[in-house]
Image (tube, rainbow, N blue to C red):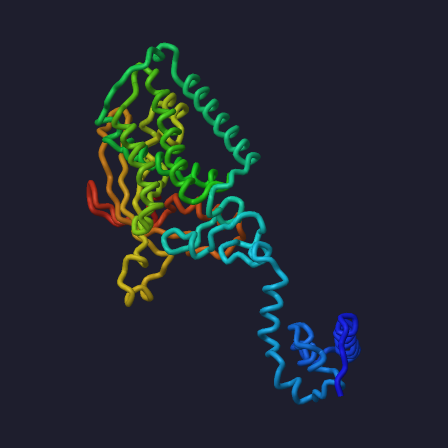
Length: 392
């Protein structure tokens, strides 16, 4: 027996089939996530006359044999229901840190010397530069304030009798040349601080490396220009070259991972001959100008430099550093001399426990300063010092 099927009847049967399947499944709790075969036939457009119309002569077995697998239906239905552009927006971004703004680097991509690098904000850097105007304004204001403070300090420190027109002077012998090492570390450290600020402002890692090194060089050069107006000092091109080396090494470390195994560091300790200083000199000299108390270091990450089979025998937090300094600088009645030390050093980032985002970033910054440790003095005479720079 045959029968005709109008469009209305055709549609009503589809709706009826859907209701008969959906309502019981809701009340029963939906035993399986895969749709029944009849539902699959209804969604995919298989004629309900073949699937459910008793007038056509179909049976339940024919439904099972003609149904399309449920998993393929799900995939096809999803792809048809969601436009490609919308699906791309909804899909999770594997390169995002999950903050929902712009894609950021992953922890494995943002490392220094084989260890995850930390930021001031606690968020990983953007893959591409997205400047935060508020943070950039604050950083710019702080930089201008610092420049103004330096200018005021230099002008207040220089007596009027020593101020004059801009001039050039070169002095290799001052502080036995140690001030060149100080300028190198100053250029590196100023670049590091600028880099961290630019990362917080939204610059990408590569852009922050360029502008960080440029900012460090600018800061050091600004102070050197200030010296140019002092009749006793002048602008020293050897100091400026040292500033450039320090900033250049910082940039090179961002581009050459092997160089990240050699950390510039700075230490300060007590002077052995404070009694020999003039009282006025003691009051006027600040720590950055007191070369008798300073050492500049290059600390090696020994663990990373060892062959793979030997790394388990050397702690990651233990490093070796070589440092240079000068003593009896500008002291009446004494001749200045150089010092050279080989010392143990600590990698605070590897040594200390997790202190949270800001705490970890602070430790990362403190890691650029060398703390007291056993040392072997190599020059001017060989001697062991238990906790250099302290005499014990």
